[in-house]
Length: 175
Image (cartoon, rainbow, N blue to C red; front, top):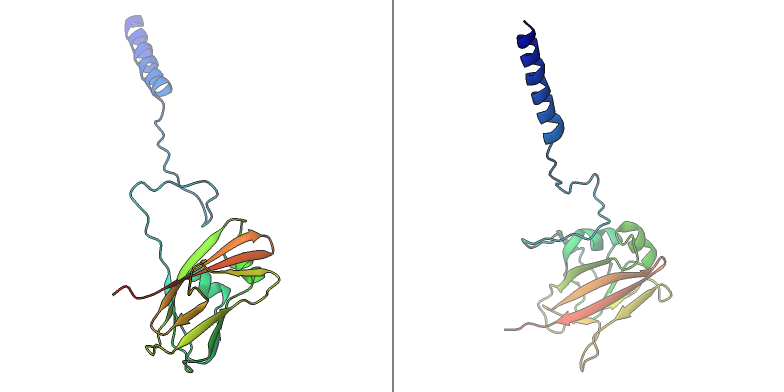
């Protein structure tokens, strides 16, 4: 009887030792709760960044809201007066509370003047010349006027808690 009890004790001890020593293998999956990521992310398989396509109401002037900038990858506008249209960008305060939460954060979208008349122009203006800086490339013919059927890449960059820099890179048809 003692031999059976000893064998059972040894068997239970071996099984328990297997659980204690072997333990559980944990595989980190990088999950996080919520939509915010504060650590650098590496995507070895590539990254597709997207958003909505926003169409602005036809008119001679329009304003792009901070929400539209933050949610959109493409903003289309068909100005009703093809010779004197203006588009006003949102100010730094709105951008910095909507999606540019930290200094250095940026958001880029494609702006398209969908009026097919080549005489059509859209002029970009900033909401505040105090908190917003509008930049364009240093090149002959560079401006912040987007001709008809042309596009521009627009990038907002938060430079401080109350300021943004907006870069406009005008694009022309390549074909």
